[in-house]
Length: 250
Image (cartoon, rainbow, N blue to C red; front, side, top):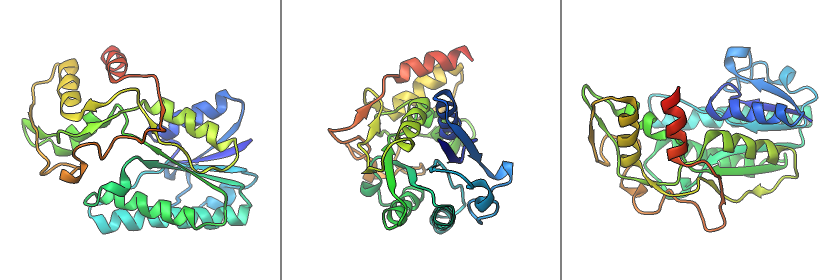
């Protein structure tokens, strides 16, 4: 199959492209750096010629919540319109477990809008919600680092390897549309604060971690089991310890 991966140069997108090509498919990488801008629609019509399925693994970075939501909305609307013109047969969206339980996060609001738009589209759709990746602890540290300290909320998550998400997206794109696929998660729950502490230890880095819901990417509505997958979730095999071992060897 000829399958386009939007955000194909990103963390999950790269793994998705690798999984598709390993399985013998023609993976078309769509990214701004390669001349295709889904946020404006530039280059989409040409890039989607002959494409049978589209995997949307995009990420939107913006300074304020409204811009994040508008960014996700623009990408999705342009993609769906271009897919209709190209007669694409399947749209696969990567989303996040728990987005309907988290109100104060701009990124989650943008993903909710994406889900709403694709659910109402006339292109057959599969929405795959996944938990946070193993890299998430390091991302939070970088987002909240101020001098010699960083804020990390004591959230309970069930992290999954980005490579396993890429494989799952590739498999979904080659099958029939499911509407909403079962949640995808890692093999076991982890404490985000503890993940950050262990990651710093592997780095050999001294940094004071502040366990707080204030000033970080997640608020108190992410406490408890809000970010955990449902009971029917498909589970990956790679643990956070496995990932840490690989990370330490880099």
